[in-house]
Image (cartoon, rainbow, N blue to C red; front, side, top):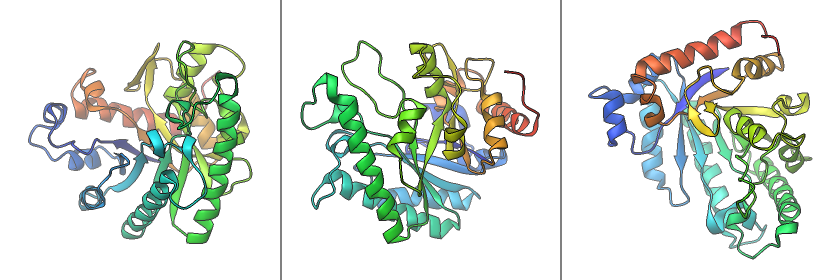
Length: 303
């Protein structure tokens, strides 16, 4: 198990960064707090030279680099087709080839964490009654293509599909993979892609819907498929808070992962602004790192 955090690409220039770090080098502070990696968000327009410089900054401070691409509009996986000229296919190849370069340079597989498709970004209008079924089929096809691509290219990357935050009932779209069973189904038959358990998302989804489709606890099958974790606390529907006595039963979740043999990365996915709402950066993050380590080393709490 390895602990890290997220940073925005503008982490040195923002007002929140100035408040969090002052004149201190942010990456040095992250490493001194015992974290081992930084997960960088990437947009479809990402500049490889700029992204490579971010990775180099990590290595200079003894950190690894992971990537979290944000797909949208025509490059959302809702619009994936296995044909030349498909923007989604082309962008994914570019992301993964770039991640493989990072893996080679840092001597450790780079995580590429992907969002499943969202009907909000579908090119053609999909009737409401068919959206979920059609997107499930597209997602299954996409992951099978991606699994084959990883095998053919031999890229040394860790690819994961994230548990999505479910849309509100009044919102006229769906995000696929917002519950454990569906996400596993969309990865049916593939061997090289795992899941990213976003514990905040799964908690909010359970609280929002309170039905058997959105259980708080995943099945053992899902837990064994987890290769990456996004960890943050939730207060009602307020997401991305530092770990505290909030709604996410993170101690129990982490114990299950440990007992299942999880050895991947745990990203404390916390925006600087949310951290600063709870106190000084170093103080809050030191507490969160300690909470994860304590949960990992202790025996399982009662359900």
